[in-house]
Structure formats: C-alpha cells, structure tokens
Length: 154
Image 1 (spheres, rainbow, N blue to C red):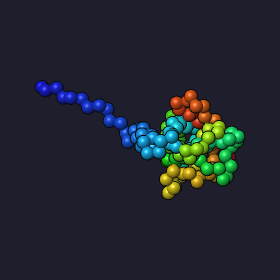
Image 2: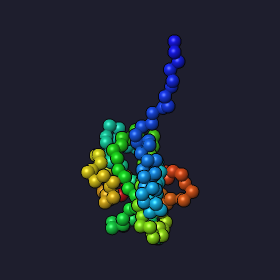
Image 3: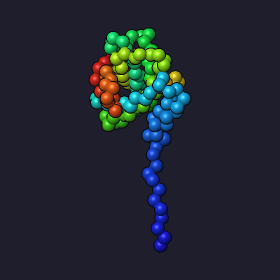
Image 4: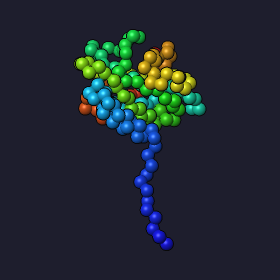
C-alpha cells in the first residue's frame, strides 16, 4: 500500500485574512497603515439570536471616550452568536492614518446590537445605539492582542 503524503492543515480564509490584509497594507501604504488584533468576549446574551459586532479603534489625544463626530482609524463589523462571544471572537482591524498623524492614546471600542451587519462594509460611520452592550480598552503598545469584555450598556 503506497504511503500518502499528508497535506498541511487548511487554514480558513478568515484566519489568514488579517495576515494578508496586514501584508497588503504595509506594502501599499507603508507607515500609514497598521493592524490591530482584538478578541471580544461577552456573557449573558440570549442563545439563538444573531448579533452585529462592531469594533473600532481611535487615536485620541486626551484618552476620552470618542464623541459622535470622532473618526475611527480602524473599524470592522461581523455577524456573531452568543456562543461565539462567550468563547471569544477575534477581529483584525486595519488602521489607516495620515502619515503625519502623531496618534495619541490608542483606544479600542466594541459593541453588539441585535441583528446582522449592515451594508456599510467596514462600519466606520457606525455608532452604538442606546441599549447596546459595549466595552472599551486603552491599548498598550506592547499588547499582541487587545482583549475587550463587553460589560457596559450605552
């Protein structure tokens, strides 16, 4: 019986998307682009419901909570379930800055709403609706993964 060559394990498209996106951004945009890996968790959600998860990152000079007209430097949205959020959902953000931007205190905000993602691909203009469950974390430059616990209500 001939031996079969084992193929390397297949990685899902979503597992490699962050790496591919980071490579593409770095080669085309240089220092104006960066990626941030996040892991979002939440407990106490209803099973069987679909949720829209939105994650945004900001450069804030004063470290304050973003206002209604603050513009995120990175954002993403996706459909998630309560089970996925209990286990932790990984989201890679592509941050786009102006090359001369000094940044500030980096802040990552995430929230969920009932329903699925809308037609805006990256959710850059999204804002939490009243009653949304959210969390925010001031990002440390030495963190590999920013961990956000959704434990507040808007």
